[in-house]
Every structure is written in structure tokens, then in C-alpha cells.
Image (cartoon, rainbow, N blue to C red):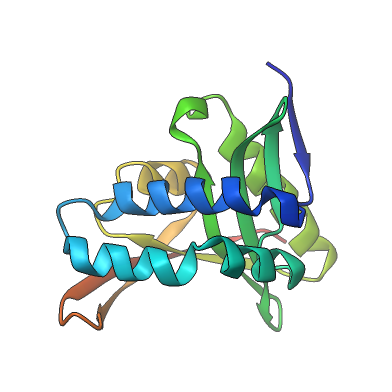
Length: 165
């Protein structure tokens, strides 16, 4: 299967929204209520919002497998010599085929060109997909961040970083 990494276009919004919604839901399953999951997905991963975010550059690259969007990454510089990975999801039918690694490399190459030396990511606590992925690529745990959701639940994310330049 040929995988190509490219910039997303508005016509990819529906597929990106679906991949992100499903991927995010899988990372919080059993930890956050169905009500909060629904609200969060409606806010972040509706097609109109994703289309605007594509146009604003929040989604940096997609991985295509033929005519299918197989994965997506978004990130940007966030400060002097620092960059963030905002989102990285791979469709469950395409996982464990190197797509996440290719997407991360494309974003990292961009961030290096923009002067980023330290790359940051937040990973949901107990995320069985994200934690091993980032740790295998040199990300090191920095701190735990607990936030209160609008439904009164605690959402726990782990901050990781790595040196890239």
C-alpha cells in the first residue's frame, strides 16, 4: 500500500473529523462520560470546524492511502524554539503501518525549519496508542496536567517533550 503525506484540503474535512472523533473517543473510553465525549466531539470534530481549522493551518498533514485519508497530524511553533503537536490520529484500519511515524517526521521537519528545538505533546493518561508511540520516539514525561471539564470531570493529560534540534 502506497502512503503519501500531503497538506490537507477542505475536501478532506469529513474524513479528518471522523478519524479524530473516533481516535479521541478511543483514548478516553472508560475515563470520561459519554456526555462529555459527545460535547467535545461536537465542538472540535464537526466538519465545519475542521474545514476552518484546515484553512487556518491547524491540521498540518494528512496521510493518504489511495483515495482514503489514513491519518492526520497538526502542530505549530508555540514559542521561541518550541513547537507543539496538537493532534495526531491514524484511522484504526491503518494503524501499525508506519503512518504515524511518517506524519510525525513531516511535522518535525517543518518545525525544525522554523527554528523549533523542543517539541511538546499532551497525551491522555492511559492512552494505549499514544504513550508508547511518543516514548519510542524519544519523548520524555515532563508533568501531569489535570483539568476540569465542563461536565465536572477530571481530564488527566501527560505532558511530554523531546529535543529535535
